Amino acid sequence: MRSNLLRRTKLIALSAALLVSGLDFAAAEKKYDAGASDTEIKIGNTMPYSGPLSALSGTGKAEAAYYKMINARGGINGRKINFISYDDGYSPPKTVEQTRRLVESDEVLFLAGTFGTAPNSAIQKYMNAKKVPHLFVASAADKWSDPKNFPWTMGWMPSSRGEALVYAKYVLQNHPTAKIAVLFQNDDFGKDYLVGLREGLGEKAGQMIILEVPYEVTSPTIDSQLVQIKTANPDIFLNFSSAKVAAQSIRKMAELGWKPIHILSAASTPIEGVMRPAGFDNAQGILSVQYMKSARDPQWNDDPGIKEWIVFMNEYFAEGNKDDSQTIWGYGVAKAVVQVLFQCGDELTRANVMKQSANLDFHNGVTLPGIRIKTSPTNFRPINQFQMMRFKDGSWQGFGPLLGAD
Image (cartoon, rainbow, N blue to C red; front, side, top):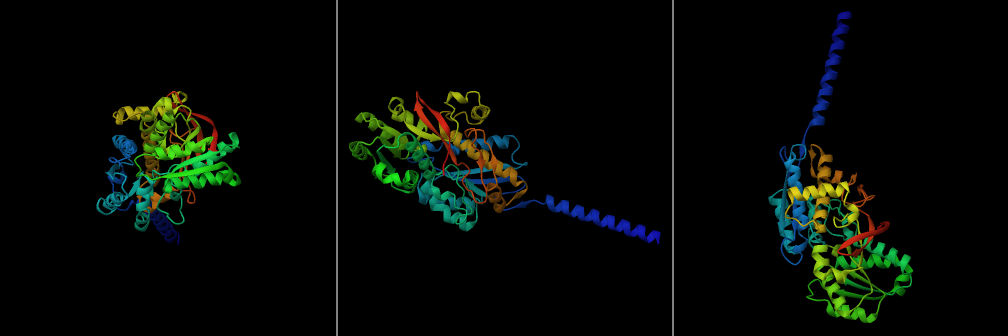
């Protein structure tokens, strides 16, 4: 009887050991979708390396350089990143063509950091139909945070609508009786700003906004619109324009000798792409918002995050311009992508990439103190705070508290 009991005990122990071994094997099992393997992770991207917005392509170049650094350091859990970035010239039909190439021919695991409102709008339905993650879209349109209707698309920065809400808060607190005129790009980019501004001003919107003037993205000049706005004599000029038009606006206002309180959209604040071409003297005192640190702002001279970014630039993107905010932007996005991939571990499926993207909570070193990269299954807006800033002596200088873009 004792012998039978001993045999039964041994069998139970052996069965338990085999069960645990099987569980360990299951836990260690690797899972891949197209674009991932034991050695490689393919990430797709489109960027305006040519065309009217090519000055902003530093974003894609910085992302590529960051992945090069990660690969040099051993990759992600031993896997090297293959970053495939194509030029779309900021042309939506070209974006569609290149995106299909990335998904159907190159078979990337996901897209990340694709540039522009119109180009991303052209591929959003396609990406969601294919169930391929469309991450950290380089556009401030409000539509990129809609997990219910587009569960495979996620934005990055605060929305244009949220940004305009912050401007409305600032105006109401500091200039509650001001007359406001608005220049806006006549598409989703500009209209989102208008929605946020009116929402933020609330019942005072009809009284405070005296003029709203659109311009087409294809317009060669906006001189006539600026003359029209100047004639209305507003106290505050809200300039919701793209980089090229912003630079034109600043120069034309100087020619006209017109000096209202000038608030410029954050998308149009790059020093090299906008402020320098417009003329530093002409740009003095312009207001906008920021959520990232600026290497030109002396308050960050000893900041660990900026020091780390400078080392990265020197070693892996030496040809890049440290005064170009696009390089910090691209660096921050790439860092978030790497965080997602580390969280994925050996389960490199598209569903898990999306799951991990919706469960982030970290600081990337280049956003302002207090601004974390934070998402959830119901929050597809990783960054949702701003600080006001003012252009002075060739650099943007932040002031005041963090303001929520909601």
